[in-house]
Structure formats: C-alpha cells, structure tokens
Length: 357
Image 1: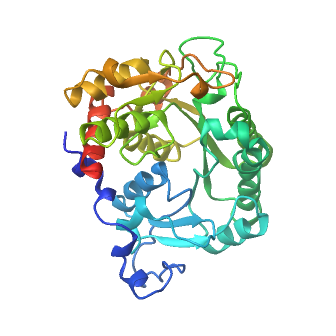
Image 2: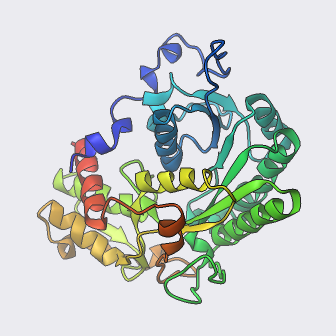
C-alpha cells in the first residue's frame, strides 16, 4: 500500500499556503457565491487540525462543500495535517470554553452541517487533567449545541462519541443499546457529551446525532497514541535511532479501523432523513501484541526482541476489550470499512519509515 497516496497531508505543510507566506492569517471570510449559481453546502468543523478533522475536510471539499474550520487562537499555528488544504478552507478562531465565540461563528457561517470533533482526546491525559477534560470534552459539547440552538437551529449536528464510553463492557460486541460504563475521565466526559446531544435532539428538535466511533487510526495519528508509538518506534529502530520500545498492557484488545473510512460514516449520518446514533467499527478485535507483530514483521523484525513492558504505562483503570457491532450502520448508512487492520498498520509503518528516514 502506498502510504503517500493514502495520506496526502504528509506532502507539504502550512508553509504551502500563499497567504501564510505573505504573513497573513488563513482566510476567515466566506467568499460570496456568484449570482445565479446554486448555493454550495457549508460545513463547520471543530477540531479541523486533528486527524479526523483533516480527513473529514478532504472528504467534504471533494463533495463540493464550503468548509469552515474552527481553531483555538494560540501563539503558534498547528496546521501540519491540513497544510495542503489551507487555501481551500476558511479558518476561524473560537474556543469550546467560550460560549460567545462559538455562537458568533455559527451565526456568521450559517452552516448546513456542524461536526464537533474537538476534544481533549488522549485518555491517559484525562487522569492528570480531569477538570480540563470535562470542560472541553463534556461542557464544550453543550456550548456548541447551545450555539446551534440560538444562532442557526436548522444546522445538522454531529457529535464525536467514543467506544471508551463502554469501558468495563457489559456485553461483547458493543452496540447502540449497550449500557455505558466508562473507565476514565475521558470516557465519563464523552458519556456526558453523548447524552447532552440526545437531550438537545429530544428537547429542541435539533437534527443532532452521535457517532460512537471505535478506535480509528492513520499516519496522521498523534505520537501519544499506542498505534503511532508502535509504528514510529519500528521506524526509529529500523533507522538505528532507538534500540527498544516500551509499552504498557500488551493484552488490551481494540477494534482498530482507518480514520479515512470513519469520516465517511460521519457524513452519512447527517444525510439521513431522521437523526439517529450509530456505532462505527470493523467488528474485529486485535491486541496490542498483534499490533506489534504486524508492525515489526512488516519491517522484517521480530517484535519480541525489541518490545519491553513497562508497568508505569498501564492505565489506572484498564479497558480490556472493545469490539463494535456496527450492523445498524451497515444497514441504514450503507457503510462498511474498506481498509483492513493489517493494511492500516503497514500503511502507518511505511509513512513513519518515510518520515524518520
């Protein structure tokens, strides 16, 4: 599999945007549509600079959408994943901690669709920053829903829910009706975000849905996540830049898919005639040990020679296994994953070998 073709964001960066070369900020104003032309649909994405946001922006642009990306105003830009898109999307500043900024953005953009992908999404960090995780990942959803309700209730709203909400699983595989039992502050915050979305749908009649997405990875995944830790570690070992890879629980099992497939499911949820929530996953479970086996063998290495278990990397409350039962999505959304687990891991190893090399 050609990683560069599947992950075009790795080619080029924020410096490729002509406006940024001139010292200007990315475009913050939506262009006026030519008279007589059909109106293009507009989508607003929070978290556009993240893995999912970058793939979703690509998908929507390919479908002819006007894409408005919400970013936090910071002292430095972090547009690595969307550098190749900066002259095609409209970047606007707003913050999930600030109600007024969100309401203003929604009022000005008048989006047909709103995708809330922004969150503090790294599970281990949620133990060291539980309050901040709650502010972004839980209350941030409420603020954005309230912005939609007040400024543009016609918009269709997507909330990024998570398989981490199932936590200490009450049944396997997990489906839309499986009870939640989160095992981290992140999972707890995601449960709040999920139910407040349901509440706004039922209380105010908003077209608001949640996608209960199981683990989805790509070459654009952050280095703090175990998949990238493994594939990046393989690349560094191959290039002679490190000798071993320290990991936590090798027996943890996850349902891993390709992020590029999963953003298509997000879009399909907002095209339905009525709002509903969906579990999205491959239906297959693989352990961290299997992840290591596939990644190292792709580089013609024996993982047992290089992987060391570090008890300090084990979570305070572990989630042992997650497996999606996504038949509802297959039936109602006509959605199915296209990239297999092995293809995904090999794609990520190839991309990291190119980066490190």
